[in-house]
Image (tube, rainbow, N blue to C red; front, side):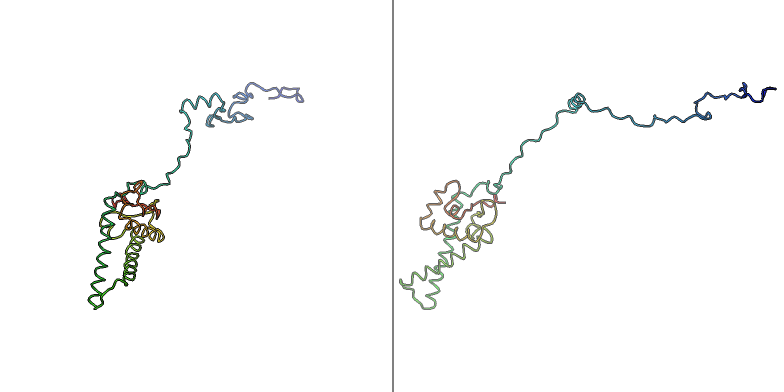
Length: 213
């Protein structure tokens, strides 16, 4: 409403022209919406040395890794009990019986063919027995780790690391067996550390079957 005679003066707001809501209130004209901070997560307090020590005491001491344990390079097969002298002697006697049977069969075969062996032919007969002994000992050891006599006595031969024997080791083991036979089996009775002469020469060891498994 304008007052008469004062058309150029600014009008004073009347009582009914005043806004019903307070300035700045929500929904009022010109009011700015305030941001809502209720749903925002609170930032965690900074980690101080005192708080870190308190967290450590609450959760317990931090496990410190100990020194790395060195794996035992010697396998379980090498740590098992070696074959005793009784089984070794039984295996040697069984193999010796097979060699003697082959020698007797060779002599009987010569007589059956009408050939009478003479003393001067003894070196050839010994060479035949050596060739048979080489095949009889080396091949079974290389393929299965034991001769027929060793299988009958329940023993087998392996590397010190538990691996099968190499061909070179089987040949050296055969040479050790010949030396043991020449010494009348004495190296078997004087086996040091559970290893006989054949084991030391070939770099192997002899175990019972149940221990090797």
